[in-house]
Image (cartoon, rainbow, N blue to C red; front, side, top):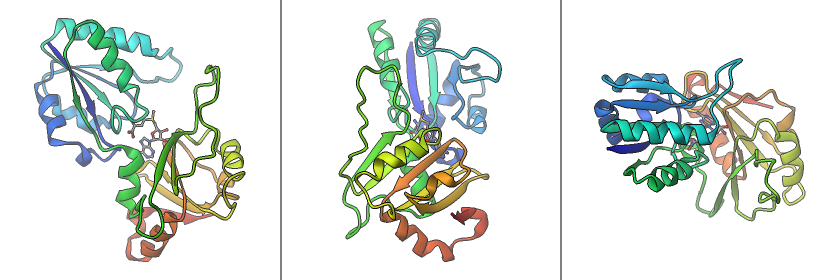
Amino acid sequence: MVVYLVGAGPGDPDLITLKAVKVLKNADVVIYDRLANPEILEYAEKAKLIYVGKKAGEHYKTQDEINQILIDQGKKHEEVVRLKGGDPFVFGRGGEEMLALHQEGIPVEMVPGVTSAIGAPTSVGLPLTHRGVATSLTIVTGHEDPTKKERQVKWDFKADTLVILMGVGRLEENVKEIMKNRDPKTPVCVIENGTLADQRVITGTLEDVSKKDIKSPALIIVGHVVDIFKEIKPMKTQEVLNHERL
Ligand SMILES: C[S@@+](CC[C@H](N)C(=O)[O-])C[C@H]1O[C@@H](n2cnc3c(N)ncnc32)[C@H](O)[C@@H]1O
């Protein structure tokens, strides 16, 4: 009995790890959600597949319900895989799942994944740190749980580069907050569907980024490292980047 919490990588199925492929091949059950690329499920040749993501028009599973499914399946089977987009511990609630299993005495093994927060920028040629430009990085949620008593995200981060996940819905209000501490002309890059065939990369500045039609899943990268990406852009093909300027 073991549950593997496995990162599926940012989207491109080739960006999964060899270890993830190994555990998927041996899995009896795979519990997966929306951001894990379905092509990756083909490795799970003998597994029962359980989807726990959102489905149009249906109640989707709460975190407690997902934890219970993991516990039940973990008790019933030899090898269970919980497959999550990116890395399980980067805004993936993997920590909560690990603790819930641990409390039930179910062994858990972690298989890290390439997080979209870093993998998607790297894949388009956007270095999040760069000598002389950026020596620090903050990865932050753009959608803090509204039921929290006190806000933890105050948008006054000092890091040179900000990477915002889950930032599409509240882009306008968050950008207003960021501009209280940063020049409105600070460059911004949005990567929508990073590493996938329908990827879009949009560049602009803090003051104009929220005017653009951007769809989730997307990353918002704020900082002068975006200028490095703009420099290399002419060397890349349009198919690779689908790049547009605001
Ligand atoms: C719930 S978080 C999960 C993050 C995931 N654990 C990771 O490490 O990438 C979901 C957010 O990740 C970002 N994201 C995930 N996959 C993405 C992709 N292929 N392109 C752009 N953003 C992505 C988006 O900001 C999305 O709203």
